Length: 409
Image (cartoon, rainbow, N blue to C red; front, side, top):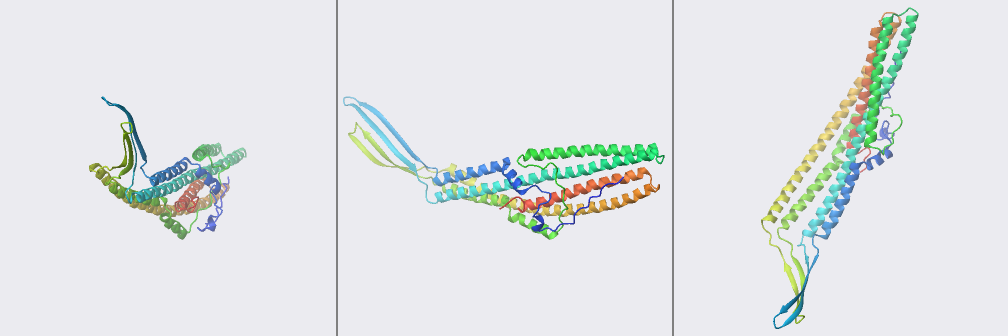
């Protein structure tokens, strides 16, 4: 029985040209459409529209014209009945500096919403990559298991033929069939897992057209300098930090606005009235101004505390992004190293199996030992495929977090 040996391509160099063909990844245009159609991205973009509408409202200000009127008919003893009315038109006026702060609050709100929308697309890209590599890893292992079933079937047929020629015992046929049964169980499981992974990917990203067969997993990259360069770009391109900074600026402007609002905006207007059926008429200016007290002071204190919390959130966002950058780099490094070790172990197992096969042909190695060697090679192929997928997953995550893949700034 011979197990096909996959010959993996040489390690690629991590650079822009190396990423040009995007081996092992879905079409970039299809990914862009799938991300744009994801509900989290659509919701975030709707919130941008809401923030823009809020900015327009803040620019206009909270005050509107207010019209009040009264028409009455009054009766006076021994004088008769009189028609009278009273009307006034009033509007609040923002005190100096408040309109500027309102515009700043609206502008920072839009900036924060836009960055959160970009971060939502970033998170959707990570989700897509995760489900994509779940599918590719499951398909790769399913292909290995399917090939193993074919090899064990040929082994059973060969052993049966040897028994017919009285060169093998029934026990060896039973051993070969037992190994075939185990391989078939594993193949059914891996094929089912691949179908589940494909279904999950399709459910979360129905706009992404999937090929009938998952693409082959290419070899991971190895250039450590390129990985470090990607890691260093994560903080610079982070929309999470930018959103937190915009929110902090918005909260700071809101705190200043609340402080100034301790002096309430006045309302001015005109009043017209007519009494005793027009015998007495008048017109004048009306001025009102609330006198601020403890309530306005408490609101200003609350806004100031919110601004301080927002500043702390900026620092927390920086910590989180630095953690992501460090963790992405560390994971990419160890995943690539693990894949290389898995590849070396596979090569060693294949070499050992070649010797076991030769010894079995010469009658020096029992079939049980050969079947054990076949199973170890089978496991080595599965481990190598999984390690390769995890290394590619880690590198892809690093590229997405650095905004070098699927996310155009």
